[in-house]
Amino acid sequence: MIATIALIELVGYVILLLWGMHMVQSGVVRAFGSDLRRVIGSALPNRFAAVGAGLVVTTLLQSSTATAMMITSLAADGMVALAPALAVMLGANIGTALIVKVLSFDGSWIAPPLLIAGYVAFRRGRKGMIHDLGRVGIGLGLMLLGLHQLVLTIQPIESAPVLGEILGALTREPLLDLALAALLTWAAHSSVAVMLLLASLAAGNVITPVAAIALVLGANLGGAIPPVLESPSAQPASRRLPIGNLAFRALGCIVALPFAQPIAATLSRLNPDPAASVVNFHIAFNLVLAIVFVGLLGPAAGFLTRALPEQKKKAEEVTQPLYLDEAVLDTPYLALTNASPEVLRMADLVDAMLRRLLQAVTGNDLEAIKDLIRSGKALDRQQEALKAYLTQLGTDGLSVADAQRHGHVLDFAVNLGHAGDIIERSLADTAARKAKRGLVLTKEDETDLRTFHGRVLDDLKLAASTFMTEDARSAQFLLDAKRQLNAMERASGRHHLSRLEGRSPGGLEASTLHLAILRDLRRVNSHVSTIAYDVLGLADPLENQDDAAERVSAA
Image 1 (spheres, one colour):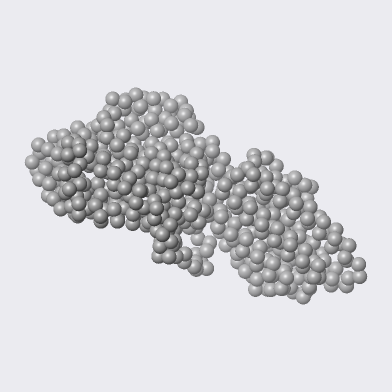
Image 2: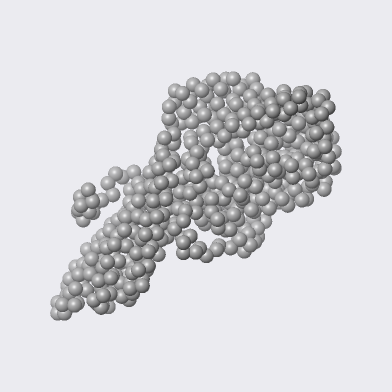
């Protein structure tokens, strides 16, 4: 009976510890989510800086799994190269170990002040950073309180014969210990919580030093499993990063497990405190992994790319969301990070529609026109899925920066949808009329159209880059490019009209369609360029009279 009560209390305090960690993580992400993204982004060009960025971000988030999910969604869509992403994960693993070290000290005395201060900030702050920092304070207080109670619960276990025999039987075989700890860490989704539990068990002499080493290895292995299983995309290529991180840890476990006995003996000589030995080994293990593999990231990335190639998508899979993971909706920054590559998929589809449009117009290709209609419907489905996801996320409780990003993502997606509508309905209709009447553009008109069309494609690429980086210089370049395209349309129209003399009625009709195509391509460009106004904080993206007329007619 006593053993049963002790186990129930043990599980309860572990859950309290996990809930405190969840509150800290969600509070930090809400308060500093965009800043964490910039920290990672600025460090990616250098693998050593990327290791440091992973360490810092994970220390703040209290979870290497959260860091893994964040960087995995970026790497899966090619926005982050695989080698620096792996470097981030090496740093994240060290950050997790350092969190355990800090929490292994007795900080129970500060738990009540943290809970009080956190509660006051959470209630008074309503929204914004004060509210989020209050959540962090409450979470830290719950973590320290749960950890303190965990230690108090474990202390009597050493003198409980039945429970001691059970734990002793479970920790006699190192390989079984490793598997047990890996399973427990995967189930808890937190290597920090499991490591703190192991340190407490070691302090109470409930587990042997050799078993402790094997259990630590298992906790490291289990902590790398959730990102592999919870990758938001079914594409094998999207699992390169989490599988690479898991492989690094698995290789470390394979090498270290046979030496568990001498490692335990060495640590005991260096520090007789069994809890400190457990925590120190955890740090040393991840430091050694980082030192060994940071120089091998290039070959590792190459191997993973070959082993997990990008698969061609079936036609019905193209419009299915790949990154809209509803499981992370309670972590706004991760949800927004997942939404961004979905918007890029919309931009890719608009790009494909534009390229197919040129084939339809210049070649009077009726099959290409049918493809435009199908692609337009697919773009509508992508837009609706993304809008539903962002609506479900909402803006309540978001930091100012995340709420702004939410608006940018939604606005760019909507404008890409408008651009697709223009291609699907107006431009495709114009191409169909031209094809059915057998009209042919003059050589000069086709040259002008190809040049103009190429500039629209270039602006679409620049718009997608501006959307991802939110860089003010890129946004200004995009605005300048839009103005140049508007001027180019006017100049092309004047030159075209000067060439009309002597044309046949069929030539005049082709001329009318040519001008209509240029006008609609300019409208497409205006929609994709609106992201520049969002980034620069400019209110009105419609600057010329034609755009203003479009706005009036839309209203």
